[in-house]
Length: 170
Ligand SMILES: Cc1cc2nc3c(=O)[nH]c(=O)nc-3n(C[C@H](O)[C@H](O)[C@H](O)COP(=O)(O)O)c2cc1C
Image (cartoon, rainbow, N blue to C red; front, top):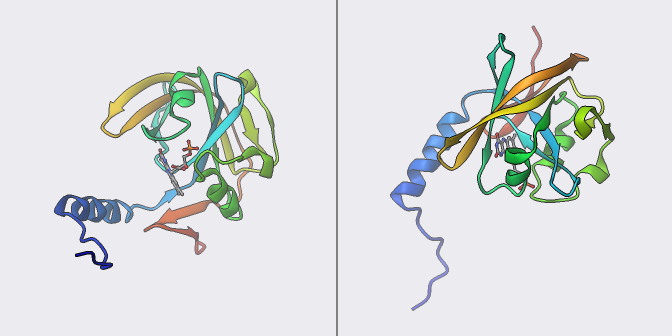
């Protein structure tokens, strides 16, 4: 007999959803990370696992899902750029959260240092050398040495409990 009722979540699925929901209590900014693939095509993805690590030497980190289509590019290419998005760049975040889509046809960008694509009009930029890849379960943690950085300021885009938000003000 067949039934159309939705499949019940397994205890493991329920636990990982609960963990994801609980992790979502942590408010973050939103970044887009870019590089080029081995063929020289620009690649990029939306990332909120970005964080600071060290000032001396200057290090940042983020983690990439091993299933990501951009995985090979980010874990093998020597340089990448991290762009911190502004509050009015929710559409950029959604665009770069698309899987393998033509992301660069719909934003303003130019080629920066070491050939890495740079998105225009972001709150801040970090140009990095890939310093180390560390295994992290279903993700890989990328450590980047900051070679160049700049900030134009503006209100940041915030991600919290699965939703975009903006700062309410001081
Ligand atoms: C707000 C937000 C934050 C995200 N953070 C990450 C992240 O830190 N690491 C990651 O691997 N994917 C993250 N993603 C999901 C990727 O952006 C998404 O899987 C994207 O499709 C990957 O692109 P690709 O498969 O073309 O490489 C995030 C998505 C959103 C909307």
